[in-house]
Amino acid sequence: MTKFNGFNRRSVLALGGAAVAAPFVARPAFAQSTTLRYGHNNEVASVAGAQADWFAEALGQTSGGDIEVQVFPNSQLGKLQELAEAVSLGTIAFSHNTAGALGSLYQPFAALDTPYLYRDIDHLMAVTDVESPVMQELNEGLIAAANVRVIYAHYFGRRNLTCSKAVMGPADLEGVKIRAVPFPIYTTAVEGMGAVAVPVDWSEVPTALATGVVQGQENPVNVVLNVKLYEVQSHLMLTGHMSNAEVVVMNEDVWQGMTDAQKDAVREASTQTREKATKAILDNEEGETQQLRDLGMTVIGEEDGLDLAGFREGVSKLVDERFGAEYGDLYAKIAAVSA
Image (tube, rainbow, N blue to C red):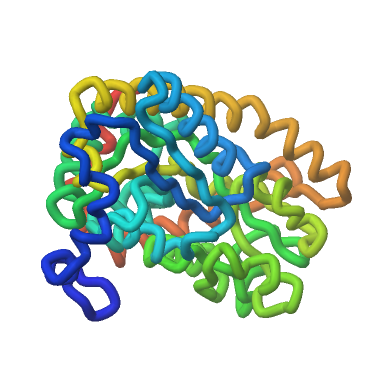
């Protein structure tokens, strides 16, 4: 049974949390048009931020105007953990998050963000398709544990390291404070690379970098470019240590309150947005890396001497120590998915 900040989620619902969700499900099966809220932490200019608007527009069309989605970007409705809990409690209908963050609601979900887990991007997208056996199993667990349903996941990019100095291998990160997404699989990745992991919510990252609280961070190039991290980070290391899918979720009570036609509308809008967002990231990755070069960042890749094997060895060893026993069976199922 999942707990948040000392409170049992189901107890909260019993005591009044369900009333918070009531505006979303008050009308029987949404007999009339309804408005649902989508909160997230990204900037609108990023693909992760833009895709929320694309989904809202698509759902308006596929539902024939029956469902309106209001999007609240830039952590307006809370930070990463708060957004995950808000969907669970029904205070918002939709959000997107990392799989690692969703692990706070249902722990096995975090396994999807394990570094060096996927053979390639096609494998990642096959595993995170809502119809894959792995995602179906995880989705059932997430619904049961937290009242949250995955509706789609889009490619988010390969995560790379940025720093205020050149980093060629793990030894260069000894004692260096690197921002980590504040969830265990991410702090493990940063520590495995040789750095000191400092958990910082995304909304606080630019300030933490500018003030020297941390000396670096890790994210896809799309994020580095759109948040202008090149203004406070001099070097980009193409470590590619983690391939991510951003996972879009909705409150299960909202889903169950929909008619079959409205559920079909959500499925169609989800498929359209997943494909559009994934294509946008893939199409832009190489060009955005060049833009960062043009903007003054020093980009270091394997051809420049970046020790990718050293990073992989250190991260994989720590992941196995911390998560191998817990996620071993799930890792085998992920490996068995064909792209």
